[in-house]
Amino acid sequence: MNKITVSIALGAAALFLAGSASAQVKPEDQIKYRKAAYSFASWNMGKIKANIDGAYDAAQVRAAADAVAAVAGSGLGALFGPGTEKAIGDQKTAVKPELFQNGAEVAKLAGNFATAAAALVKAADSGDAATVKTAFGDVGKTCKACHDQFKARN
Ligand code: ASC
Image (tube, rainbow, N blue to C red; front, side):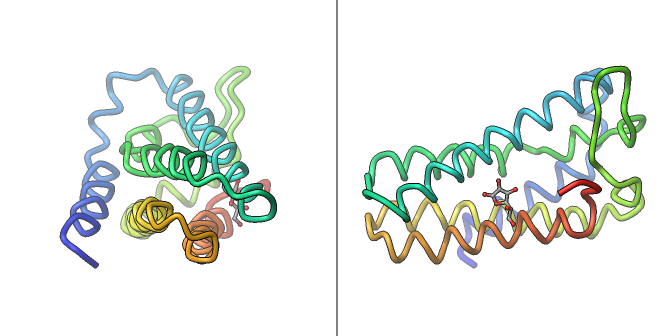
């Protein structure tokens, strides 16, 4: 890992552990924002997949990779604060309660997501579809690793 990747990973881990930042955001809004963040990342992952499978537009792939990396590096851990382990009113969540008992593991998974997303941006810079395909697969694995452990509905 290079210096930037390490600092992104550590930043993601630190932000997960520093749950106090979430005190500013109401629990139901934490759930709303985190679902919006993952949905936005998923939309951008879908765009990259469409480029890999069809006509490849390097600028669109780069923009989408930037968006995924921005989400991954945004300190999402702050949106998993106390009281967000189950639905609040209309704000449903697929998170498993176990996530809240496994901070170190979650920080590791979040760091892996941020590291892989940063690598996807680098791959997108190359403009090479095959390079992007590999890096895209790596990001997808980090998504799945967390879903397998901590997401109830997949
Ligand atoms: C995506 C996306 C996910 C993950 C997951 C990986 O592109 O929207 O939720 O990758 O499918 O297994």
